[in-house]
Image (cartoon, rainbow, N blue to C red):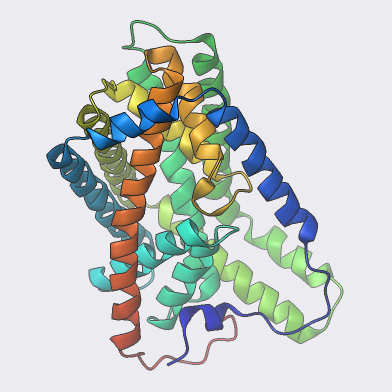
Amino acid sequence: MPSVLSELRPPARPSLHPFWKYAATFALAGVTLYLAFRGVDWRQVGRLVAHCRVRYLLLGLACGAASYIVRAMRWRMLLSAREKLPPATVLWANAVGYLANNYLPARAGELVRTVMISSRSQLTKAYVFTTAMTERVVELVILVLMAWGMSLTLPYRPAWVGRLMLLVAVGAIGGTAFLLLLPRMDRAREGLIARLPGGLRLKERLHDIAESVTLALNALRDPSRLARVAAVTAVVWTLDATAAVIAAHAMGMQLMFPVALLLGTGLALGNALPSTPGALGISQFVAVTVLMPFGFTHTDAIAYILVAQAGNYVVITILGLVGLWRYRVSEVPAVATDPVR
């Protein structure tokens, strides 16, 4: 059976390797790591890590694992607008996608989970990938709204928090409105494709891809499904923030729930930047920036985010490896020939 990565391999064609892209990525990681690690007391970091209370760390990891499971069920809600998929199929594909994001550059996990779902269903890659990206937009919108609402309960809130929340909320809501309105532009889409240069076969392929994208976006136009997706997303971020609070408690630190949501917002925005696998550098910089105004020392913030990232790697590596094994042993269903696939 071919591997998932082999299915992602594009056809050979002459092109210049984007060294500039990788150079910029590693340069950004290097700068943010330097800024985050500058002045850290590494002996104190070692002491904080060594004195972690394991039972609380395990409880935090359990919350994190539950969050990934709920995420998969949310994605299944969008995918099921066209085809009902077994929950396990979506769960393991989602886990392998997160595994790839943690170990491969350029958010390759989004393509990996797209291929896995498409190969185990009759859904086109365009449809699956669009639902994955739609899920990301909804996730950010709900997170920003939750973080903004909970930040109002904080006794102290830095000025940059309000400005950042407003800016991100406007952008996220605007993106959601665009996704909801795009399926209504069928005529304009067809006219644009018809005017493009190229042969009939190319235009038919573009039309099929555009149609798959429209069908995927239509999944959110069902008010009931949209409400369920939003509610499940709120559960996801509640679990993530709870896991963060518990992990901080395991290290003898006090992390307030609203601050955990603000940290989640910063990390989510950081993941949108070009970064190394696991957002190395950006995650540390975000943690220091968000946590220090709320009573964390520079050293505390670094110790916390290193432990939190290590825990996340443990959870997603276990789930992802199980997912890869399940994908390899599962049978490929017979599906009709699809030009978009």
